[in-house]
Length: 94
Image 1 (cartoon, one colour):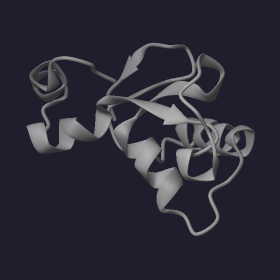
Image 2 (cartoon, one colour; image 1 turned 135 degrees about the vertical axis):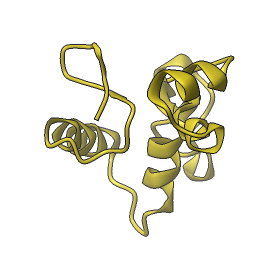
Image 3 (cartoon, rainbow, N blue to C red; image 1 turned 135 degrees about the horizontal axis):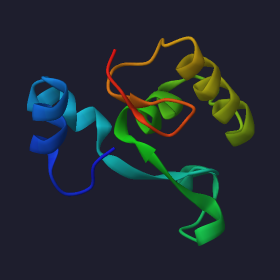
Image 4 (cartoon, one colour; image 1 turned 180 degrees about the vertical axis):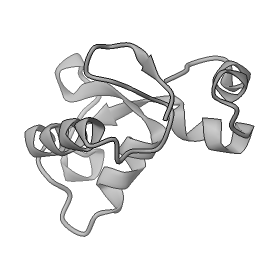
């Protein structure tokens, strides 16, 4: 994920800046604001734009713990878009 410079991700992984935008660090509300979730530290975690938007596009978004498990499973199966962080916390090119 990146916070200030999409060019770094773009050049590091050989992807277009439009693709790098998907990996921008965003504030993911565990309980959606539309469902009464606030902006407290306990309700916000870091998530890439791709994962944040994907969760909220689902008809019935999963609870945070279930979504976390899904993301971790997908990372292990290497079924999320590159670049992602592997379970060892190291950059991984796919």
